[in-house]
Image 1 (cartoon, rainbow over the protein chains, first blue to last red):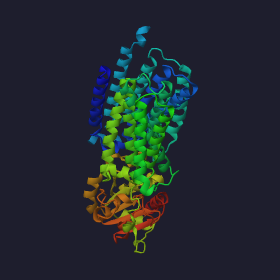
Image 2 (image 1 turned 90 degrees about the horizontal axis):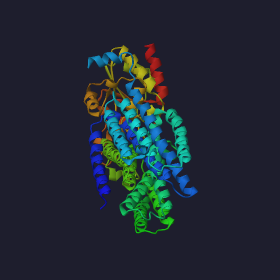
Image 3 (image 1 turned 135 degrees about the horizontal axis):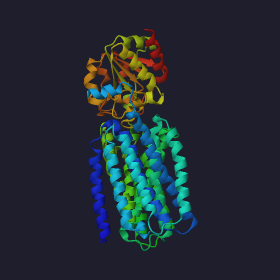
Amino acid sequence: MDPGLVQNLAVLVLAGFLGFVVISKVPNTLHTPLMSGTNAIHGVVVLAALVVLGLGVEGVFNKVLLVVAIIFGTINVVGGFLVTDRMLAMFKHKPAGGADKEADR
Amino acid sequence: MSWLHDMALINSLYIVAFALFIYGLMQMRGPRTAVAGNWVAAAGMGLAVAATLLIEGMGNWLLIGLGIAIGTVISIPAAYRVKMTAMPQMVALFNGLGGGAIALISWAQFRDTAGYAHEPVHAVIASLFAALVGSISFWGSLVAYAKLQELLPGRPMTLGRAQQPVNLAMIVAAVAAAIVITTGGASGWWMIALLAAAAVVGLIVVLPIGGADMPVVISLLNALTGLSAAAKGIALDNTALIVAGMIVGASGSILTSLMAQAMNRSIPAIIAGGFGGGTTTPSSSGGSDRPIRSTSAADTAIQLAYASKVVVVPGYGMAVAQAQHAVKEIATLLEAKNIDVSFAIHPVAGRMPGHMNVLLAEADVAYDQLTELDESNSAFPQTDVTLVIGANDVINPAAETDPASPIYGMPILTVHHSQSVIVIKRSMSPGFAGIDNDLYYNPKTTMLFNDAKTATTDIVEELKQL
């Protein structure tokens, strides 16, 4: 077997366990922003489109497919991070009395 | 400047990028650090894109720039204009586009390399897996989006008895196409067949799912897109894709199972058939002519003003009517009278876990006024008035008492244990799950028939006059 593949599989398995550990302790309240945040992160697929198009493909139709893929991926990333920020900004915002409550804790 | 295009440098930048993803996600576990965490992850993404563009031999700059520019121009206004109530379908749509991107990349590669000729076999298998799952995720997410956006009816739509066989046949067809392609020299039609079969699977798996199960499905599709991205990373030998995709795959699976637990639904059961598809009739028959008691906004205001402890149970109806600001005003007016007010949040209130918290935070309700399921339920016996606004299935006592009910066993807010219950609801029509609710016929319960916005605004006016 290709040694590069073995390494990649090792990384894959470790990343899987890491994903479980990082997320398992999140309060219910943050589940929606978190789903949205992880959604933005898998927009990383845009890298695949960049590599495949950037290293060159033949044919107009193939190029169109890849440009559409870049558009989709970019929307996934940019839109994903922006909506997550909008959701999270609401948790940060506290009324004037908020500072006192914080001090009480 | 050749060192700039060195793969060692690019891979090192990838390591920094995925370290930022992970650190960002870790910060997103607490409400105080979450905003910064999101931007840390976004910075990681920017770095990963920059590193990719440094790869030696990159070209087609014009097309790359065009794609990124169009994507950015579309997504910024979309992200800023979407209402908080429409967030779940927006996440579904973004998720679907990610899956669609993977399917398109795999297809373009297939066409460009004459059916993945000269590719190592593991790369072919990984690419086909990515294409299959990406296509399922794309079409499934589009259906989820259309249902939540009410472009398609929210009720379950099934093929009836043909549902499971068709499902199975399509999966077999997709796998068969994948095997033919792996053996080499397959014509382009096999790849199209694979993508189309996966598309049908995505459509017919999500179409029968009712609105109540939708959050679980969106989360599941999110996890699938992550796995698909990880597979694409294996095929392209790209570490950033593998790590980021797999973390999303794993965390998405955890989120999915947490949500399914909160609704006491098993994930296979959700996938296998729509919520309440044809099984709800026994519990919903014969309830319509039982007596109910209705009340007015003025009476509700008086009842609330003379209570010492009030619990508000917000549901999706409140969110749709944009009534959260009026609800917050009610809470403020009552607190001015030294009445203890809290908000009981069911884990799946709204359309995603935490969705209701986001909406109430938008209306400036303090974080510590929100109570979760167990805490709320132990407080109901000491509660004078429970005000239910646009919630239905999450307060249905049938979940505890009626084994024939489709929601039997789902954890509910036990509002029927409080001294009195006021339910604001538009009409007697059943909720998402399509099940009648015995709570409305309980002698403790009074109904205030109106949409949530009008009803709560009226209560605010009446409270001010007291």
